Length: 361
Ligand code: 5AD
Ligand code: SF4
Ligand code: FES
Image 1 (cartoon, protein in one colour):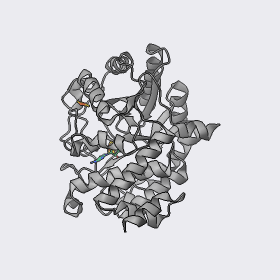
Image 2: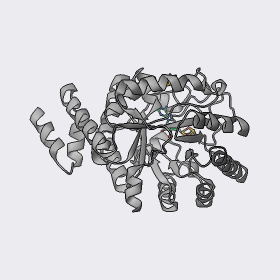
Image 3: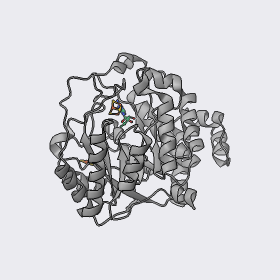
């Protein structure tokens, strides 16, 4: 049995059956996958972790994803929208602390006013950092012109998770309406890639109704799509959302955690030179969850630089870490955390996806 895992890992091309098999491994075999992924990471992207200072600028959202704590219909959330000057301050903080990049994230809003506001923010962030801060944005589905405007204003990476590459499962997680259309999500991803963004996507792991085959297909979806970056994390139920109803169908939370680590390791093996984030949701389950992800293939971490007073309100899922600290605390804490992994921190570097660089040249 264990020999077979060794044999599978030696293959150049893994089949769907191989991946499903690897996703179901026990502890001893699982460690073989992790060790292999760590080697691939060291060889192809190096043992360096890049920071993306995360600014959760607003929890106002026009959508109703069934799993998400800040969905439109959740009336128990106190909505906030951080002022532009506070956002710029957070970016300045990241820059001063030698973070190479930031991520601007918010709920999904489509409006000319919002488009303009983001464009201005992007230009200002470029200005205050002398063009030094790399900017990733994660602002959902937008018209092509908006994606273009933001790209021209200075954003060069975009994160838009597909959540699940299986349309049937997608519609169990989202209302089946025009606002939550699987095909639109796909075409947005394609536009982002075409416009020239480093394009990132990802899925949630351990969802109700999700099978191992779905997860294997998710990995192949990312490979076929030729993504540059990935952020994927465990699904964590939120009791103020409709999907909470299916909590009894879920695998134990520790298994969702381990399965996420396996997904990260396998993606590293399949797509050797992309950027893979150690999702914050991992730390909601295990105090050193993100460090474990770095050990098995992740090379990006997103320290929260959102002003402390807002952090408690950006609760997509329960038990979110770093929600009552001030930004400075995360920086120190993070340095210590990465130290434990034995990796180096890529201070003052953008840490672009090597895959993107190759894809372009
Ligand atoms: N558990 C885990 N991840 C979640 N997200 C939203 N809600 C949850 C949840 N309950 C993730 C989605 C989304 C990203 C911003 O956060 O994948 O794309
Ligand atoms: Fe809005 Fe994103 Fe939450 Fe969906 S996952 S409800 S788009 S913030
Ligand atoms: Fe945020 Fe430790 S990383 S408090």
